[in-house]
Length: 229
Image (cartoon, rainbow, N blue to C red):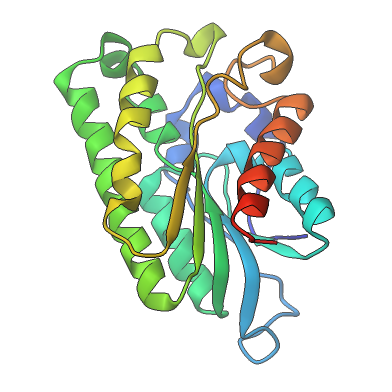
């Protein structure tokens, strides 16, 4: 699996100061060996935040299940605008047929106070992220992407608790991301599957190994059902 992002040890302590990472959202470093001449297309691309990037297990599990290489541009701390930039960066090296992504979680986490209180300010943050994602999906359709799988968010705990209303609202809005496209576009709801302490890491935000593998299974189930392999 080609991991086309930069991470550091501090990523494991991401929850301590969400704003620390928001400024570098979407930063990726492309494999020096690959050029637009050597890789014109890729079957499957991952873009998103640390749900994918921190331990890489969702991508590596999907690689094993699908027996194919998957390029990942996901980055720790990426807000939605950064995830849009990840996709733009990936286009410099070709186009994917399948895109697996998430986005919007860090937009909420960087507005923790308003989103705990679930104020109109938080609603506006979520709506902005949803609109950016919908525009991105339209661009993907124009680029010839055939399938998009949007991984939804689950309930955070610990220091990131109190966001259930914001998460439920975001999940209510997420189908709008796919509403304007004619290609296959699905939102994967992870809330029920990720209930329980064993699925979420000690920080209350990121998936544990078991949680990552479970979410990879949810994605693979939908990919198989749609003939995407």
